[in-house]
Length: 199
Image 1 (cartoon, rainbow, N blue to C red):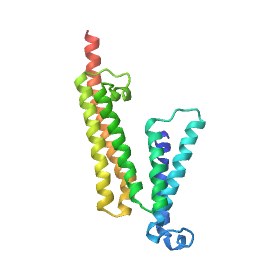
Image 2: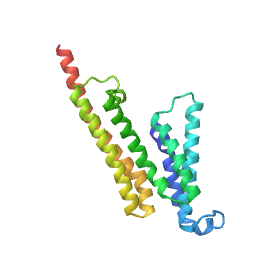
Image 3: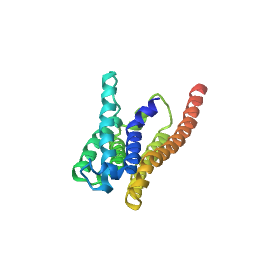
Image 4: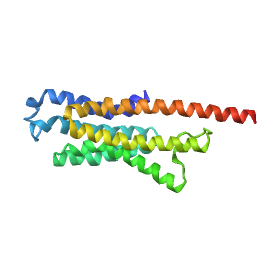
């Protein structure tokens, strides 16, 4: 249920784009933008509202929003607002890339400062230092790479394909990477526990 809640703004974006794209001629009388931009402008407006509502629900429940949720909402509002105001879809298309690269920059900063942010993500796990380093490098490479992949799809294919990729492609790639990381962490975490028990 939480996963669905986290994805709700993106799902709303996807549905709005598809529905609005099917009724472009009818909506053109009410939406003051070129016909070919109606779907993406409306979808962007919806994801801004959905993201703000999502953040409001989290705060009203007395929960602390994750840094990813905060940064994502800020980027959606900023770049989504520019997409609507300037009628430039490129801004909202850059949002996923900037979010991934922002977290890559945070990891890189922590790496240089010796803070080990990746250990906080997997708090409670004991693993050899070289494994933590490998895990951090893998996350950095993935975050940077998926940012470039998003831009490649955005600039190489149609808006329809990018919208599909935003929901299914980015989610699928992140899911596969997360599963792989899970197996990697589980393997070395077990080995570390076995060593501790033997000692």
